[in-house]
Image 1: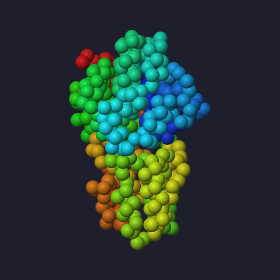
Image 2: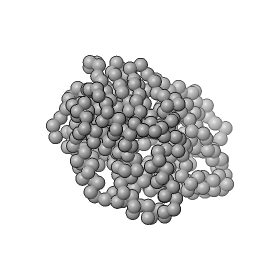
Image 3: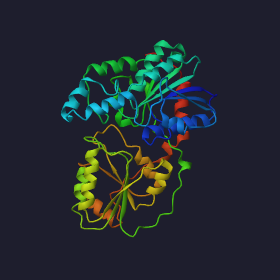
Image 4: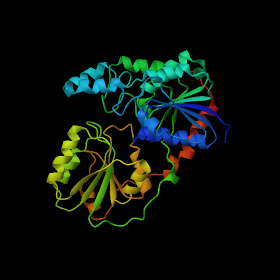
Amino acid sequence: MSDSKKILMVSDACYPELSPRAFRTTELARELARAGHRVTLLIPNRQVFRDDPLQADGLRVIFADGTVEGRGGSAVARRNKSIRRFIPKFAQRWILYFYCHEFFAKYNPGIFRQLVALDEPFDAVLSISYPAAIHRAVSRAMRRNPNLGHAVTIAEFSDPPFRGDVAPNVFPAYYLILKCWGRRFDYFTIPVEKALDCYTPYKSRERIRIIPQGFDLNAVKRRPYEPNPQPTFAYAGRFYERIRDPRFFFDFLETLDADFRFDLYINYLDPCFAEMIRQAQQRVRGRIVLREALPRERLIERLGAADFLINFDNTTSNATPSKLIDYAMTGRPILSFNDRTFDPDGFRAALRGDYRAQVRGIDLSQYDIRNVAAQFIDLIDAGKQKE
């Protein structure tokens, strides 16, 4: 292993929040500390983080400068949410085209102030998105704080910028802004190769590394599988209009003349999807059950009790849901589709125990957090790079 490094990680999400970004930050921070590196994790000053702080030997957690955010989110987030209630969706899209949500609504000035105030040197700075506003804060701080500018700087992307759940694109000037601050980072890291074309406009190909999301494969307990009395399938995650919209599938369920149970583990439901589920519960022959959100390890264990799992592919081709890795850890068959790729006959076969349509070829070893953390250390060892 390389010599011990002093690493600063900056993220908007962390344990005990339940989101792919929180899992990514938590797993990587813990593993880097476990491997003997000295890790400082800078996260927003939220009450949820203070009530149940992330702890590990070799890990220090610090918070953004400013007042503590309650569970309702920051003042900016609460204001924007209130305003959106009175604006039609088509108008929201036009507003967000000119008002870049990822740069402004998600920007945390307390993160920037704390970065500027840090008076200790680091070997590396690892900035984790979503949102891209985290990278904006780190980039700005590098110009003000030489302790950051002298470190190897890495911008990690979970999803391509400006392709999230809020607005599919933005005013072209924002792409130029992203390119300007992107030049200040030594490297970009992205989770999947198929997303490369989304990043090469901002960074040369040789400065982009593909490093998948990491998981502690030893932390998950797998239950012995026992077939359920009625065909049971499950889904865990969120729904998004235009990106991950499941209405086609719920319409299909209403046509099934078969008994089944569909378990949904969703930690946040937009009103339109809540109504969709409510109506489907009344119309289907089987049962659709909304379950409580669970911590990741418990969720994977619970999912392992289903006969099979379903995943709704993003309609965009530049991101792979991290839940596919979680699903694979359960050992249960996975059916993955969107409205264009859905195979009704394959799904009906799965209800009969025939999983011919299941996803194959998921190699869990590449997602082992030990291998993932080692790839980040190799990148740090490669040193700073000139643009």
